[in-house]
Image (tube, rainbow, N blue to C red):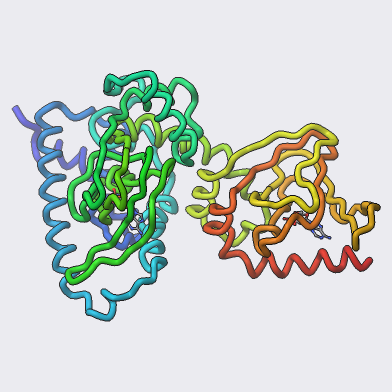
Amino acid sequence: MGKSKKEIGKIISPILEKLVNRLLVIKPEDPIPYMIQHLEDSIGSGAKPLNKRESVELAKLRKQFQNLKKKDDMEEDSKVSEEEASSDDEDDYIDELPEVAKVRMSGPARNSVSQEVYGIFNKKQDFIARVIEKSDEMKHKIRERLLESFMFANLDEKDLCIVIDAMEEKIYEEGDTVIKQGDDGAELFLVGEGLLQCFKETKTTEVYLRDYEHGESFGELALLYNAPRAATIRAKSRSILYSLDRDTFNLIVKESSQKKRDKYEQILKKVSILDSVSAYERSQIADAIKEESFKDGDMVIKQGDPGSIFYMVSEGEAIAMKKFDGSEEEKEVMKYNPGDYFGELALLRNEPRAASVIAKTDLVVLKLDRLSFKRMIGPLEVILKRNMEMYKTVVSS
Ligand SMILES: Nc1ncnc2c1ncn2[C@@H]1O[C@@H]2COP(=O)(O)O[C@H]2[C@H]1O
Ligand SMILES: Nc1ncnc2c1ncn2[C@@H]1O[C@@H]2COP(=O)(O)O[C@H]2[C@H]1O
């Protein structure tokens, strides 16, 4: 026999109460996906796992919700005026993305990542990833591309192998649509070869957002938020893509990226130049970081070299040495401790390195390449430029 009203009330009241409280505190722009996610989290956080029938029901509900959402989106699009539609400002759309995630990031303490995955797999150890047969050569190619990408580069060897096995090669000819805005999505794509373009569609037109090249991935939003595809992606040239299914993404990739975020979050909090960035932006910086270690006396940067990397000190000490006006004599112009940064001038001014930086102890630095620096630290340019005044003082003293 089913449960009595009282019994059902007892189970769902605390969940609903918590849900309403969260909604009132967080005020998400789009409350429905937030509510669905919250309910799924509630399933993951101790309640009995869904049985098969319940899972099917949940899938049906999700499908109904996605169709409704698609309809809403289309109605919304039809309201967009011609002027708005012709806007080609990429940032309008880029800015929308973090907002969704901010809601999730800034909310009350979240369940562990493996608890919030889509579907009924609540634990990584219960999960058996798919294996798509492929040659060693293809495995090698996929590995190379995975290591180029922020999202996958931090997988340990075991997880890297699981992801390589689960990936499926898909070839698209020039003009083919890989992802259609509004569709349901169950896979993420890593670009092996080729060039793709991302567009935001409105009722009347489509606005170009960005390109995707080898080593970059797309299609993660539908998996992360159980939402319809947020943009359209088309092949600009013949493209070889590797697709990864939702469950492998959620259980293997998302978790490792979370580990990296956890690892660097505390360190990045000490980097004063990042004081004004939000938790979400900091987590994106953590995704893009590469770590490197140097021994006492190693040269990290050489004056006069071209530069394409920005550095933040994680552990240890370093100094900056500078030769002035063609003189061979070097003067110490700066000391670095954990939380300090250097190497910004070459990126900001497109000039060779203005000084040398040398490790004074064993040193661990966090590095951002030019593109990540531009995207993530670029908005802090005013502060960086203000801080550059300090070099003048050092030089003149
Ligand atoms: N500004 C953007 N808005 C939405 N999607 C974007 C944007 N830029 C890139 N994308 C990618 O386009 C993909 C479309 O499918 P998804 O929504 O699954 O995931 C999306 C992102 O990976
Ligand atoms: N007096 C200084 N002049 C120029 N660069 C300095 C000075 N002191 C420290 N630096 C740092 O040394 C770095 C060398 O590489 P960049 O020119 O990219 O960026 C430089 C600054 O971050």
